[in-house]
Amino acid sequence: MGRADIEAMIRASDGKPLDLHDKALSGLDLSGLNLRGANLRTARLNGTNLRGADLSGANLEQAWFLKADLSGAKLADARMFGITARDANLSGADLSRSTPIGDFKGANMSGAMLVDLKGGADIRNQSMGLMRAVFTSVNLSGANLKGADLGRSRLEYADLKDADLTDVVLMGSDLSGANLTGATVAGADFKNVDVSGAKLLDLKGEASAKGWAQRVNADRAVIRVSP
Image 1 (cartoon, rainbow, N blue to C red):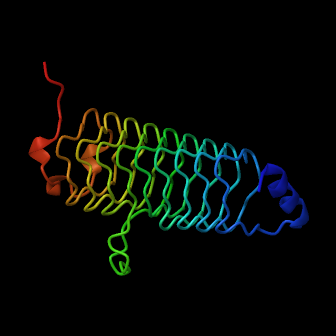
Image 2: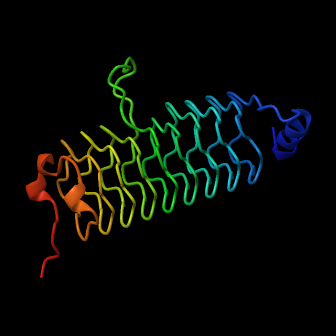
């Protein structure tokens, strides 16, 4: 299946979402396509070019996006339970209200819109083990995460420089080694957050952050630049 086949399906769909579940789409150029609401559950899109594509409301559960290019893509309200998107490029993408309960290790989300994102672990539904957003070593510099739920998520060594973390739920998450230099943390919940080795420099709104005194390994965080 190639781009021409997908475009033909879009033309014949009469505006209805495409069913592409379990399809092998790795390496294709699907940039700019309208895939709103598409069913891509368990599909393989490793290395696929989806730059600027519209995947709003799409079902991406258990899909594979290793090193895929999703820069500038629309992923608002997308379902991502069990997704694997290691080293993917999501710079400038809109993931607002999406549920990225999966593995994004090494991905680029710089400048991305992650407002009201739902990436926290649901401890009431863990039959598959502790499922949560894995943003280990993810570039989130300049990203907008206002109101996002990242409770119990993994953010080790994430780059959150100048990110907007206003009202973000971080309770119980792992921020060890992360760089929060210049980040806005007003209203963010840091209760039981591991900040060992994290750079907490030039933070904005620190005075109104929640659970600030209940951070884990706060004495090991970098809070000033060494002379």
